[in-house]
Length: 118
Ligand SMILES: [Zn+2]
Image (cartoon, rainbow, N blue to C red; front, side, top):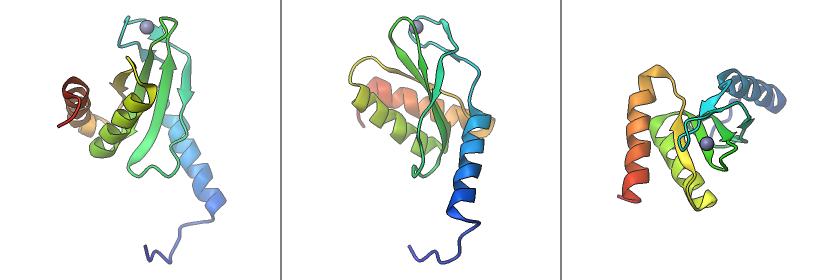
């Protein structure tokens, strides 16, 4: 709304966003279901998601997907909730976060998953 001034071209901003997402990508994610180390980590398309720095899906051989989401606590919790809804069943949320927000997000994600809604 009313943001006339833009930093760089659209292409430049997309390149920057992509680099940031790649730099945050974890080499592996520990499966929340079977505790296996998942190295099959996929970068999710999070363009346009406010507050989300990056989202990653670890596809485990146990057929569960563990998500790693980096970003602001509220935005990440919201995305986690919508991923849960999209995936339907037992997809399990992980969090891969900046240290300063890790606790807040982990807590809110777990609360959401445990309570369903609040
Ligand atoms: Zn697993």
